[in-house]
Image (cartoon, rainbow, N blue to C red; front, top):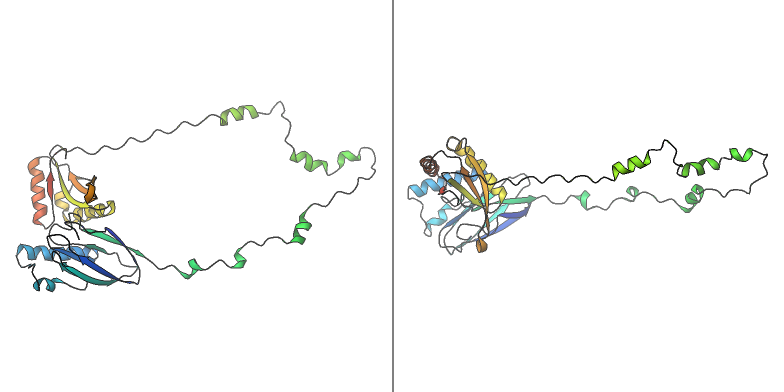
Length: 290
C-alpha cells in the first residue's frame, strides 16, 4: 500500500488455493483492504463513508481492529496485517480500499482466477491417435511395377498404348490460339493498392472543463469504474461524454483517468461534481486543456 495505490493492480491466483495476503501500509494515511464483488465493495464503501461523516471511524489501536472481518482489514500507517482467502473458479472478485475517495482514485484491482490444468490436457496422446506409417510391404506394394520389355505389336497398336495417356496428362499443354494465359498473368501481376490508414480519433474538447471520477492502474479497471458510476449517478451523468486518458507519471507509474465532459456551463459542471461527492464518490473538476 502506497499513498493512493496498491503495489499490484492484477493478482493471479489459482482456483481452490488458499492465499495469504500480507498488507503493509508504507504511507502516512490509513488504508483498507476488502475482497469481494463490486456489490460487496460498494456496500463496504457506503458504511465507511457514513462512519467518516459521523466521525465514528477511529483510526487508533485497538479500536481500529474492530473494523476487520473475514474479507477486510483496516491498516494504519506503518502497520502490517495478514488476510487469508480461498478462491473458487466461479467468483468474480476484486480488491479495493473503501475509505472515502480512495477506491475512486485508483486503489482497486482484480483477481485473475486460473483453473487447475485438467488431466486430459496433461496426458500424452494415445498411440492410436498418431497416423500409422506404412510398413515396408505396403510401400513396395504401392510403388509402380517395373514395365516389362516391350513386345512386338502390330503396326498402329503403339498409338493405343495405355502408357501414353498419363504421360500426356502430366505434361503441360501447348498454348493454342484460344489460350488466354497472357491476359490472366497481366491481371494477377497488378499489385493491390494499400488500404488507407484510419484517421486517429482526436480527444474530445470541452469548453467548460471536465470531471475526473477515477484514476486506475489499467484500462479494464477504468472501464469498470465508468459502468459503476454511470449506474449509480445515472441522473447526473445522463447525456454526458466519458473518455479515458492515459497518463504517465514517471516514477509513480501509469494511470488511466476516467473523465466526463459535455457540460453546458462551468456552473453545471461544478454542481454535478458536488452532487457526486454528496453521494459518497470522489470527483474533481479539471479546467479546459488539462
